[in-house]
Amino acid sequence: MVKGLLHAPWVRQAILDEVQQGHTSTEKAEKLALRYGNEIASDYTYTAIRFLEVVLSWFWNKIYDGIKVGHIQQVQAIAPGHEVIYVPCHRSHIDYLLLSYLLFRNGLTPPHIAAGINLNMPVIGGLLRRGGAFFMRRTFKGNALYAAVFNEYLHTLFTKGFPVEYFVEGGRSRTGRMLRPKPGMLAITLRSYLRSSRTPIVFVPVYIGYERVLEGRTYLGELRGASKKKESIFDIFKVIGALKQRFGQVAVNFGEPIRLSAFLDETHPGWRVPPSSPGERPAWLHGATQRLGERVAQRINAAAAINPANLVALALLSTGRQALDEHALARVLDLFLALLHKVPYSPYVTVPEGDGRAMIEHARALGLVAEQRDALGRILYLDEANAVLMTYYRNNILHIFALPALLASFFQSSSRMNREQIVRFVRALYPFLQAELFIRWQLDELDAVIDQWLAAFTDQGLLTLDGDTYVRAAPSSRQFVLLTLLARGITQTLQRFYMAIALLLDHGQHELTAEQLEALCTTMAQRLSILHGLNAPEFFDKTLFRHFIETLLEVGVVFKDAQGRLGYQGRLGELAEGAAKRVLSAEVRLSIRQVALQRDHDIEPEPPTGVGENSKL
Image (cartoon, rainbow, N blue to C red):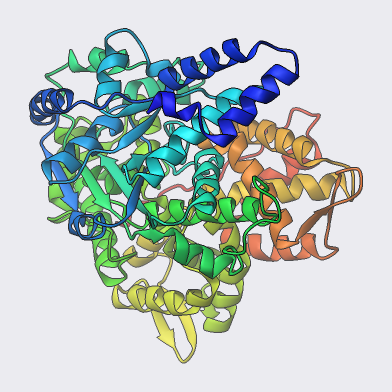
């Protein structure tokens, strides 16, 4: 197969280009292309697959309490007659092994897996290659011959019907969020399909959820500011030594498939028209790749496997001191479960069994929460290390609670709001939440979903309905405190949005480039994080600010001049302040404005008090 790549027209042309540019002779260029092919290609063997099955069967039952699998029947039904491309989220090194193992045990062919070249190590690299891994360099830049060989190798896999797996995020998520998809592999897939669309391609999104991820302590160091370690498969074996630890269960949910031809018919109806010259890239290809990446990310998130660690993290991190007494925490968890059952995020999401008390005990057994006893009972809290680590598990499901948290936040400063006001403010903020968290609902679905959540709030007593106006419970009530805790799940995201706009407005029209605004936002977020004691490293993640700025440009709120400097609509300040008053406290808004307006001075804004916020629970 590798030798056959050298005869493909694109590879022959790349070899010819190398020779014509005077880099080498034809013979040497062919040898180099052959070396690239052998470096890339997998060497799939059944004996290696069976060996890995035996080893991994022991591993999953020794380290983890087994694997939960959801919705695999649809994959078994769709696989015959299709080129299947598995696109899982990437949380751990063992994602590679886990998916292949599950597919093999369920009668499906293990896929050829795109792996980073850093994993092609002695012994380990050979075993992975025989298990289906093919290796790719981090960048193809400046090496047209390597790019041609790699593209042709993937095209061969696709056209011959071999299942393939790759991670659209590019690398492992250190924050627990779905990372913004990288365009590389998706673009290669699209170009291959345009060359030959005889075998229909279907993408199968896969959500992999861990109650405790193996690399958790490594991620903790990186989240605290340690330099990123070079990825190595040996990280796994360091963790295996701690067999006394409990890692809970692993959940793998298969999401709603994406048929590539149907996607292209929907987004680019003229895609079947052949290009005017061979090898030409259609003008729409870049946009299609971006939209496909977003669709994949949304479908992965729509198959989330919610577990007790996620919900306990969401509850405790929404309190002022990451602590609640046992009865209060159980009530918060029961509320979350009731809302999840009342308004299911998607048919592919799975929800844990049991009640709030059972989830507390489960999290305790995993060592994720600490406790303190007194005469009145138990207080559950997060110690310093787990307070940071639990942001990872909260972020796994933040997209599911983003919309209800946004609705709850409206009633922190307003006691009454009618439906028309609620819908207007949600529609203004939702595009930015959707872009950052890859939420599944489109704008034309939003009004109906808002009504479902408001109905759920009234069923739980968090709001009451007076005509067409929703009224919150009294601030002294338990229901109001529950509503407040729900709202805080999204507060830091809204703070970042407000901070970016405040900095842009402070500098004025056409003064900052997107890169300068991104750098300023990161610096200001780090400052506020220290001043307010935020245990959330993603609060100052520069990629989140970059994504927000790009979304501002996409929706037309902000625009670039000829020099690349940012301008904005004249009413941006009025609109931003109006929305911020609804969702952020006066103390937080004041702190952000002070830091933005006097960024060169040592200002120490007073943090929000929040005294006694949880006592009513």
